[in-house]
Length: 281
Ligand code: PMP
Image (cartoon, rainbow, N blue to C red; front, side, top):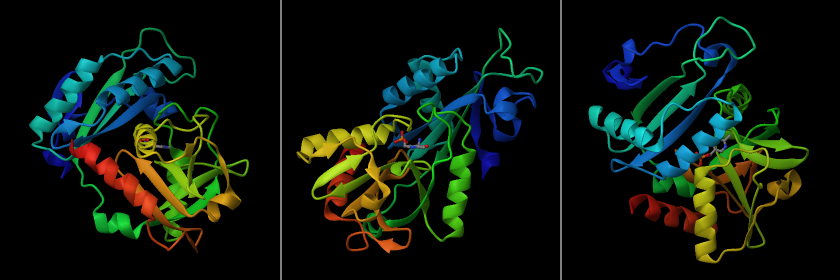
C-alpha cells in the first residue's frame, strides 16, 4: 500500500520509496525530533492551529528551529490529501534536528528534515465505542518532559506491547500511585458524577483532551483537572480515553475488572456524541 503513497519530504512531494533520510539523522540516532498527527474529516483538518501551536512548543523546548509556519503546515496537509485522494485521513508530520556525524553535542546550522505522510483512517464505529475497550495499568517509566511531543516513544511502545500480550487494547500509565495518561491518549474517569483528568503536568497536552474539556463545560458536567489515585481509578463509574485517532473511547475493563456495566457509560457516550458533532461541523 505504501508504494502508492506520495509523501512530503523537505519541500518536495515524492513517491514513498524515494522519501529517504540520511543514516545519521539525529532522530534516528537520538530520537532528536518532534511530530504531530492531524486528523482530517471530509478533507478538512481538525484544529490544525492547535496542532501547529503544540509543534511550536515542542520545537522551542528542543531549541529546534522550525522550518515551517502554520500556512506551510496547512499547505502540506492539503496537498497530501489532494495527491493521495484522501478525505478521511491522518497526516503525520515529523521534524528532525537533521543529519550530522554522531555526537551528543548539537552542531550549529543543521538543516532540519521535515517529512509528512497521509494515510486513510476510519473513526471507531458507534458499536465499537459502545462496547468499549480494555486497558491494563503499568508503571509510568517515562521521563520528566512528557509534554514535548518527541519521537522518543519507546516506553509507550513497550507498554502497548505489554497490553497486547495481556489481551488488552492499551496500557494506562501510573506514576507515584496516580493515573497519568495512556500510551497514545489522555485518560478521563467519572466518579460520583464528576469527571477527572490529570492536570497538564508531565503529560502530553492532548488536543482532544482540550476539546473534551470544552465539551464538558458546554454540557455543564463538573470536571476537575486532578490526578486520580489508582485505587479510585479502578473503582470509577466510567473511564474514557481521548486522542486524535481514537477520538473518545470508553473503557470497559481495567486490569481485568469490569468498569461500570462493562461497556461505555452514559456520560462517555454523551461526550462521544458531542465530539462527533464537532468533527462533522
Ligand atoms: N498522550 C499521549 C502520550 C499521546 O501520544 C497522545 C497522542 N498524541 C495523546 C495523549 C493524545 O493527544 P491528542 O489528543 O493531541 O492526539
